[in-house]
Amino acid sequence: MSNPNFAKQSNDSSFDSLWDELVWRGLIHVSTDAEELKKLIDGEPITYYCGFDPTAPSLHLGNFVQLLFMRRLQLGGHRPLGLVGGSTGLIGDPRPTAERTLNTPETVAAWVTRLQAQVSTHLDTEGENGMRLVNNLDWTSPLSAIEFLRDIGKHFRVGTMLKKDAVSARLNSDAGISYTEFSYQILQALDYRELYNTYNCVLQTGGSDQWGNLIGGVDLIRRSEQANVHAIGTPLITNSDGTKFGKSEGNAIWLDAELCSPYAMYQFWLNTDDADVIDRLKVFTFLSRAEIEDFAKLVADEPFRRAAQKRLALETVTLVHGAEAANAAIAASEALFGQGNLAEVDPATLATALRELPNITAETGTSVAQLLVSTELCSSLGDARRSIGQGGVSLNGVKVTDEAAVLTDLLPGGVAVLRRGKKTLAGIFTA
RNA sequence: GGUGGGUUACCCAAGCGGCCAAAGGGAUCUGACUGUAACUCAGCUGUCGUAGACUUCGGGGGUUCGAAUCCCUCACCCACCA
Image (cartoon, rainbow, N blue to C red):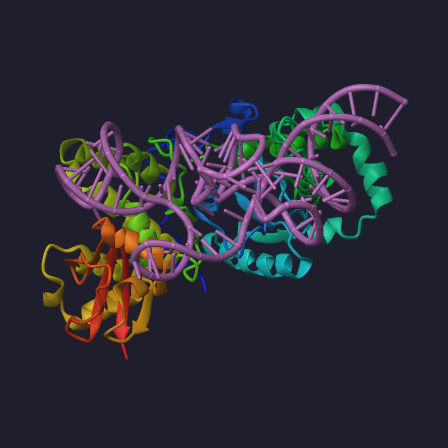
């Protein structure tokens, strides 16, 4: 079941060098020796890897950057190893703010399976340089504590480990750090060495926040194997207005359709800031340099058309959920945000659109406040009343002004569209 | 092991017996503007609710008419000393 998107993906042939294209796309934030890397990436096929830890049931857009980066290297002829961290997920990569809560082994194992499926979707598993899945649990679980401390631990200096940003940030905070999380960097370094020895893997990629961990592996291999291997850290994607990328209403944009609907993801991309949209096209699509430069002109000349945002949304949703889901998201968006009266939208189209939204079944006579809570547009009745009082709620396109209003009028097809704010919507079906 | 400091709402952070549902800042959310932008400005942000009531300040217990504020105890964090 090969991903139909693969056929349309390619690197931009207007670049003489894949490395140059990666630089142009802004994907190289930090790396080991750039001269050597350029030769390596533009040369004979190499094996490289990137790891994903099972800290949630799905990957999110931050991980997607890595998947696409891996895919570009694969299109360049290189061989990817997709590591899902069955063991590192049990330990937890130290976050700068606070200690992680440990998940049960059963939970982690279940998430490993799900992430493996996602990784397999975005990288071609067939052919000469097909992606191979690996799991660090395979080589770390047989290790005894004594072996770990004698054979691995001796290669690590505590002074060096303490200097890693993730660790020092925690030591300087009130949260402190457990020995468990402190040890994380050793495990990741060990992964790289294992993959180097088994598959001759000579490049690890990851987010720049992982740089300390990436370089830990490079150092270990240099010391214990006397070999020179590489690492690339991609930039953390940031919004120009300073807010965190990849969050919608505080929730992460997940790749799993159950956790984040194709419609929600489409809307997320459609709302990309003008100042960011060109950078996003470079990172998240396979559009060529020429095409992206055309969009840059469109953004400058007629930003109100949002041509770049629309294309970005189409491309990315197609990559993640497929062409059919992307078209449904577009149709739903046009039905719900179109200029016309909602009552004039074709009932079948409207019903389909509402199924893309969070939706519930309710009876007429239910209070609008209760509907807001049931659809999770509001967190409580108080919140719902507040929203209505602020003039932020509309039902079927008509602003609700009475906090005690109830559902009465329905649109053709026996449905209703509930809206909070400008762009948070929910569908209501009647039985 | 000892001593001292700390644990407050989404985050940071005031409060130190009643005037505390709890200052201030950030963030989110809503409104105006607009392009389903950005910027800016304004407002909201425990729950239920007509009033008003109810639950909350790490967990548990106690003192008191009354506790986020005092006491005991448990857990966790930080610092210094051993």
